[in-house]
Amino acid sequence: MMRFIFVGIVVLMAAGIGFIGFSWYAARNSEQPYGGSFALTDQKGAEITQAALRGHPSVVFFGFTHCPEVCPTTLVELSSWLTTLGDEGKAIRAFFVSVDPERDLPATMDTYISNFSDRITGITGDPAKVTEMVKSFNIYARKVETGDGDYTMDHTASILLLDSNGGFFGTIGYGENPDTALAKLKRLAAEG
Image 1 (tube, rainbow, N blue to C red):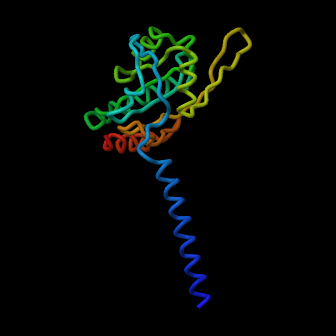
Image 2: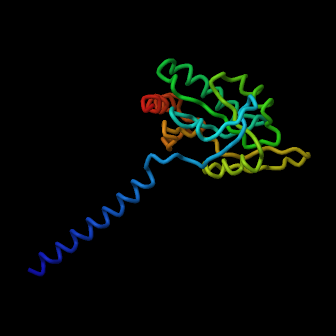
């Protein structure tokens, strides 16, 4: 009899722990938008808010226009992947958020982005507000003095994938296998 009571208690505890674990997982992976709210400026000088990341799948890359390698390489690859997807990926919207808004004014962003794709929207704005957005999206960005009076930026080099509700869908890492990256974008496009 004691054995059945013990087994019953263990089963109830396991069920309770399972329920708590499931509740935690569901809360962390719910359809909640990723990142925080923001009100910044696009490369044409118009206001852009978190609403731009809703209603369609999105890809968001944080970088800067003076970036020597990672940013231009990523934007070239992203543009190529979107072209390869064709109509299959037409719902995906792409965004390039500056982590260097002091130098990346809207006109600078517009000129820079136009070298890659007309499907990518640049986001910049007040440095304090950009910093808030960067932090809310859990992006690492830090100014690094180069010693000659200039600076560069260290930053996260992954592309964020967001579902049509603005929820986190995954990432594409810098230098990721192009076929794998394209497969991720196809899954994202199918979601939207």
